[in-house]
Length: 204
Image (tube, rainbow, N blue to C red; front, side):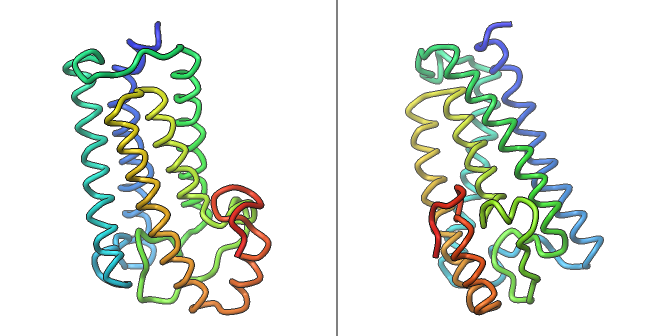
């Protein structure tokens, strides 16, 4: 199967799988385990987080619409650029790798996982993937979004990628300031030795 046909069929399925395994199921698991909601972007934290939350919700909606439009209309109608097949297949490799990292990191966070900054105290997780980078969930999600952009390169997906990088960068800085205030010197020592998204890069 050529990459164009594969992408047209696989992207909607990949989008649904990501929403299910990286959003819905972890939220249900957390609710059953703690009795608390996973989504707190709109409930607590600084006001900027609510703006970021709206931006991320719009981005996820845009990905769903992009996937559906690709399946219904095809690449030509959406202005997907002609690039070597190797570039597009490498995008799919990033999607798979990022998906695996995201789901594994969520499992490693356990009851500390939230979508946003929670007013309730959570434990500082530093083992597993969190011993490699401080934000492996966001690293995984950035890999997925980068992969989708390479698999369906266009002006729309490049703009979406830039938007998502900005939103994640803002959210992570809010979360890291929150963790610094919550865990003090323990977080400071952790952030001084573990990179933000890439090992060794973005030390505090």
